Image 1 (cartoon, rainbow, N blue to C red):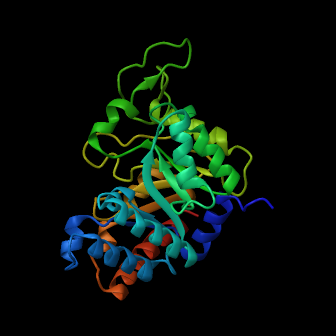
Image 2 (spheres, one colour):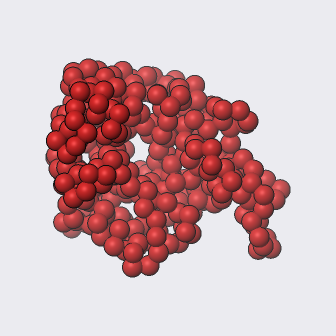
Length: 304
């Protein structure tokens, strides 16, 4: 029996629960703000409170793997519990691990995060394509086979990213990478590295319905700190767009409309600290997440 495709499951989750991803980021500062100890006990209390408050109402939860790994094997055990209990409650779990490697090492990551039976297997995982998009093939194949998804970094909002992601890739003839520019649409000198990642994802998603299983990550804060916001050609992506930076990092619904326009129907904004700061009270956490979800839903409805 073939597994249900990730794109179909994500589409159903967003239709039922609204277009929002909430990050579970147990940063030491947040643990302290919640009155918790910065140790495994505090980590577990924080993470499981988030699951209890959000997993039955929010479409996607995104635990940040690094904050769990920081506590060693005991922290990874908490992460395994978060993944299992959140999935059991019906939410889609996107593990934010940003893995990227080659050959057998990439295959091992795929086995850990995208293969049935692994305690770290979520519904999807974030990946870095900057060893070459083709290096992700073991993960792309494993995700397709198990009905899971991947979200590939395309244009992140950290200021250091533009030097690489905005570099131009000449179309013809092949040659050296040109000077950085805005990481968006193709221009006379070629298309950006970020746009090339989008194009590679689109090729993997071609023909899949209602949505492909290879998403891209495009920061929602792009263009807020001076300069023009990049314009991406997302028309053929046929996949989800994860847009981190919504809320505490400064991105607003106006930024989502500015960056994504007619592609808003495929955008999944991510909010972490702006929701998590309302803890440790479960009801306050849930209410904050639902307010954010409703704000994004109203924007999508306004754009048809």
